[in-house]
Length: 218
Ligand SMILES: [Fe+2]
Image (tube, rainbow, N blue to C red):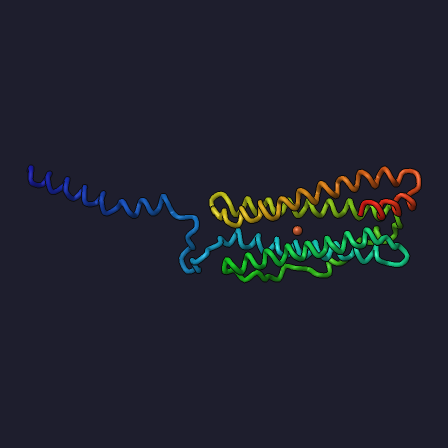
């Protein structure tokens, strides 16, 4: 009787010792490790990489969005060179952001290309805006630019939210927070200030107000 109890206890202890590593691996699964069947060097979770692709598209979309305004203000009938330069610069910056994210994705072993980008949609000036002239178009363009930057900031924050937390991709999160969000906040503040000033200058003489604003503030 004592013998069978002894062997029973030994068998139970053996089972506990053997099962332990398996239980530990279930509870403390490394969030950075790749699921079975996928590449595991520099692994990026697919939810995070998919949203990163969307962000790359959004940066190039923003670049085209600003190009159309630059081209609008460059026309001889509109001829506001300050706005033209401002929007060409904004377009170049967005393009650089897109390229930076492509470089990052490549470093992490991703293929940063997908089929979601719609060139036509991002380079199509709002018809309602084409009917506007001079001063009011300048204000509309700045307000649209601020709305676009808010949209981009929101998207970066969503990307951060997806990649942190359970996915634990703090390298990408740190890059986005330090490099991208800082610039977003500065850009939004700059646009908000320009909008407030231009509104004041358009009150009495919109054409003169837009002309002086273009010279002094852009
Ligand atoms: Fe950007």
